[in-house]
Amino acid sequence: APTGTELVTNGDFSATGSELAVALTSFTPYTSGTSTVTYDGSIAELNIDALDSLAVIYTPTKILIGGKSYKIVVSMKGSAALTASIAANTNELQRAVIAEPVLTTEYQTFTYYFTQTALTFDYNFAIKRKNGGGAASETIFIESVSVKELGADWTAVGTDSGSISFVE
Image 1 (cartoon, helix red, strand yellow):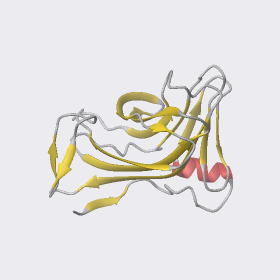
Image 2 (cartoon, rainbow, N blue to C red):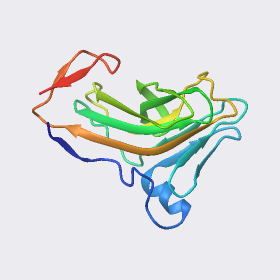
Image 3 (cartoon, rainbow, N blue to C red):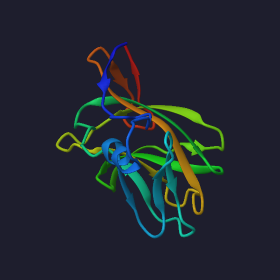
């Protein structure tokens, strides 16, 4: 079934130019404590400090529109087994959890379907570590991100991001 156009600019982190330009055109970083967000040329890295402080990347625009449904595909891994969080945010502030993938040290591709049910709000798409998810002193490596709006020929089955699926 068709999906809409890609909503994430440079979702594979392959844009040319300086690290700062890439980070700012794809996602906006936010950190607390001594956590950092870095870019090594093809991979975004969320480096979480020993206190499990926040490291987030989020889209600079609000691409999750109230009442719309999305297919989200993310490829990522951890420096150790840990839990990440994919979320609908207002900038760095989490508003709704889309998924909490358990990462291994090998890249995995995670696919989720999400309906932005807060009809009067639009949100940024974000990836971060799950608070208390075993990420202290670890790194989340993000290889690619895709967020596409589902077409009108998709029908939601289920009521929330944990149980929702879509059929044609």
